[in-house]
Image 1 (cartoon, rainbow, N blue to C red):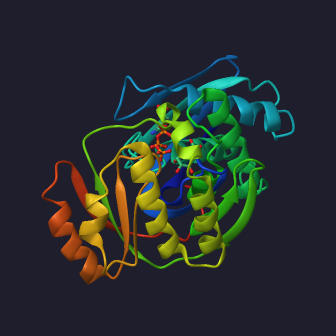
Image 2 (cartoon, rainbow, N blue to C red; image 1 turned 90 degrees about the vertical axis):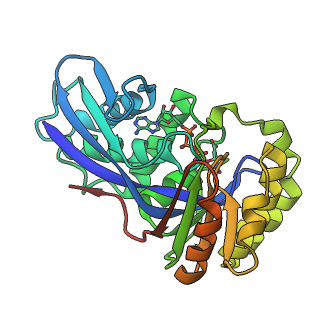
Image 3 (cartoon, protein in one colour; image 1 turned 45 degrees about the vertical axis):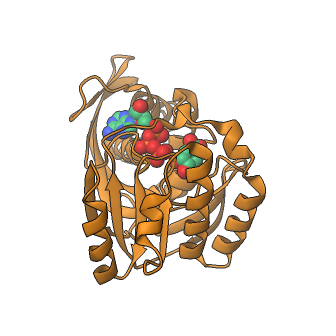
Length: 290
Ligand SMILES: Nc1ncnc2c1ncn2[C@@H]1O[C@H](COP(=O)(O)OP(=O)(O)OP(=O)(O)O)[C@@H](O)[C@H]1O
Ligand SMILES: O=C(O)C1=C[C@@H](O)[C@@H](O)[C@H](O)C1
């Protein structure tokens, strides 16, 4: 029984580490997972571009899908293990929600292998990936904000304390991303410093819930660069012409949204820094089996 699915990376509007509310938007870079199920009783995993990567998250995703859905799936009786392999365009631990994309793609691929992917609502599948991320210890809040954007497409606003979807809107933006060569794992972020930003984060959440996503993003960026010890210089270089700019996730990537011509000018400035600078777009389609 084989399955295959893809889910998107995302950029940040509001980091949830301060007050539990978060907001993110899907971007057009994806992670694909292939799952083969069997009766071995063991789940193993591999990551195409990083043979030494921690595979706990994707293995846990398959285990949870089997525990929840195998018994009732046609031909699923006796299925107790398998192998999952991801292949990704999303740099790992760069602030672009690689963990959410990998979890969503894996959950959907496992559901596809069981032949039930279209019977399980995407939001429910997404919550399973969030459970796996909590079990694997790769997240602080569960990151339902990132996971819902990656799974549903568009921009989402969530309360990660209750895994509630507060808003979802399609957004048509060009997006500029700068990814420095370093990694920053969410699980290592200084949560106590982020929590000091709670009143600012509540304001950002209000802006996002008013549909002022790009403004929300910029306020978020200045607050979280300060709390997490990143320079805000890339943001100052992008303003005032971009619609919004922020540190993404717990860093180190920055994302800017706005008109393509403006982003091309910012790309020339950001490209002088070490790392990778690339132009993409928002993605409004949901994650899919393929
Ligand atoms: N392609 C992948 N395949 C399997 N596991 C992955 C993959 N990408 C990420 N992961 C898992 O996610 C972990 C990184 O999660 P982390 O939240 O730190 O990064 P991120 O999601 O890119 O960052 P952020 O939450 O700031 O956007 C990795 O250690 C690994 O366990
Ligand atoms: O691990 C987490 O809980 C999170 C990590 C970052 O991506 C944040 O942007 C997100 O809001 C929450």
